[in-house]
Length: 418
Image (cartoon, rainbow, N blue to C red; front, side, top):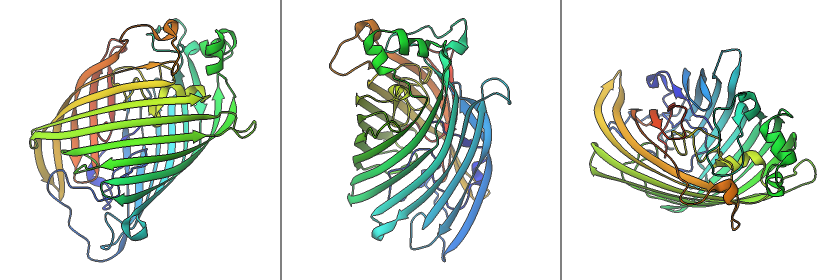
């Protein structure tokens, strides 16, 4: 899921919340990473903010849009009593009249229900991906420079409604429950590689590529979370671990896919030299069972796994398809300059990173003709810049090189990778 950045962080609304496409699990308030907290409010008030967006990456395209929020601030609640965030974004890889990615959403957040123990997020959205790729099933490196690129792409339109509730059991332990309904429309050329594999490939591949042009998916999720991070936007110390189980039932022809998904993530943060050196590491293992929609075979947590801005950077996103995915990210961050401008606190930093991972077509059954043999890692290495403003969030600009890249990956987006 593509995340964008604000043209000017200083224009953000006074609520100063993190802007992200994914529903945040954090309940407790963020710490200002610059050490310069905004002034507290003394009485309830409602504030409105809005600003233009620019951003994107080499996978989804670059473009522009608008974002904003309406927040009700109250000294009894941190960081706000409620917040309604909205965004629209349009990206292209060629010309402005030929979009590769279109997205719009609303996000209502109620962070302090049940005496501050419950957070509720409600998020309707609309997304159209017009340049999704399919080169084949499995972990092998496929031809990523075909003579006819149109044969390797398809379009997915998917409006959705997501609801998530996070309960603080006893810090640092949390539990999450949620449901997401998604309606999907697929536009696939009958002469494409995807359509041909779905009709003509070996039985195992055909079973994994069952295509229903219009269908719905209901996903139920539950998770256990352990969170000791000192800050939810730019973490210096602590850990964040999550084990999530998802169930998508089949309900007649309208809901044709029945599958389960188990996702485990572990994150570690330490700062041996405060502000000047922060070391971070994350490991992810994701497995799907049953019969997921074929487009989910590239994804973990609603975004690309082996490739993309939130997976293995440098590797093109949504290129490798399989039910089992494992990858890791290692990143070193350093602050260069901290300053206050027009009443806002800013920090400029740099980062260096190494990401690596691979996938397998299926759990418990070997398919060397699809997944190859040996280690089979896809990896990327690179560096980037970070701009942090107060508690609002981070602008992240990364450049990554990989043996799979075409020729490099560029990412201008919001928030740290993890």
